Image (cartoon, rainbow, N blue to C red):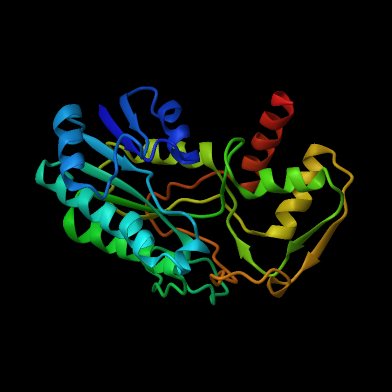
Length: 277
């Protein structure tokens, strides 16, 4: 199957070609394809003739989005709409990656695909607008929400904690609970959707739940680091964009395409970090 990956410079985009190794993959970073540029998207589809497009492109600067709403909506809403309209016109399936930030974080049980959305930040609203655009424009869509992504490379929470640990003890938020997701596991889940015909809205995140504090404790234990981890509240780190208090993702899809437990993803990350050291 011919597959076009957009946003190939990000941590998910970089992981997708390996997960799709059985297919013919073209991976384009933002510098080679701006998904909000309709003529450029048309040209890419005409040149590559993909059967599936996986959109890993996004504006992911959660705090900066509060001051740059136009940029956030261009990347997260206009871009997906352009892709959805262009792929629909050619009968191409579209996999679009979204986020737990489309929820308000006030639940006490995992959010399901049918749970009402109520984003509280510019970033969350822009991502929800992107979901709506894809769903409306292309009936052959997979909208996949995920959360708390990390990989061995790139800018992400475990990499930041490892860097801070070199300086001594760390203070970590313990009142935000979510679904830590190892990027290679998500990439494998997206690969399993390709060609499945199981169109619609999906949740795909590390199974189970943790706070940032619990994730950090498990990370340091796996790495054998004797570093003090102090639990603090969200108020200790004021940020421009509100963070969901609870954004654990569950799924009601049948068959459910469950990712491994988040602890398994963290263990794989730790092994990769130790091998790279």
